[in-house]
Image (cartoon, rainbow, N blue to C red):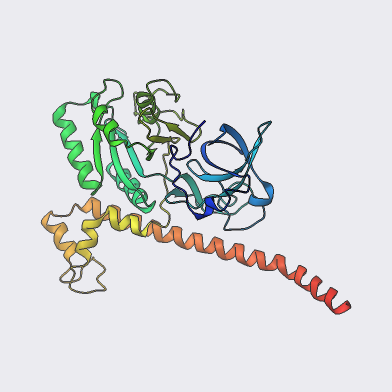
Length: 364
């Protein structure tokens, strides 16, 4: 039977208080529409969220996602019930600004991708898929999640060593503080180094657009066809959305990998700390300006503009930072507006009930 410590569970007061309740600590390994596959000490089970726990109209309820640890009401004869989502140590979410009803009747602008991971592996393939600005966006979101990013340049067999070295150097510059790998799941190039990076007991979430080789990498690490792979169009190097759900795999060495569907759009959401970490050299420059309220446009003594003019700072990177910062502010305003609307709606719903209670009290 599975040991939950092998699946990354380290305990905690929220889980320990239920030890004698008959509930089991479990981990969500797959989400398929409204059904969840979880692993617990009894094995792998299918489960549904308990209505009384998740459909009460309470904003603070965290709906389960892949990687979450949950408390499970086990049913050996059928589907079990998920009664609580335990506190998350890390969370990867993206802005979903076009959605008013984000599943299960709860208004939200946040779409949870995965939870409770230790590293975010940003995958880009060494063909037309590689995009510097997208890499910066992913790196900011990775840092904002609470985990450390790693950049994985896939399909290294398609490129000569000299070109490959240039891409590796650029990725290190665009994602400061991140480990950078170049590998090929086809030839095995770089795979030994990457396997050594996947520490036993740790969880790694794989992020990237369609066709970058996330599922191929999972299969290479698993040593079998565990994830379905799709073809890539030759004209634009874009892949088809083969992975349609998020799934957590236990790798042979004891590490865990979360495979996710390809995402062409990944909106920034509440990523202040992530932007600071992803653009640390720009943050340092902004602190050296002559004026504390410098707008970094035309003020004398602006360290940012001085660095741009001298070539020390790439203007495209500065423009990317400004664009992501603006997007982040807009997403935060949108999130606060949604919260306020939910709060106001809740008050309106409570007023008739309060008046009814008052009337009953007066009659009594």
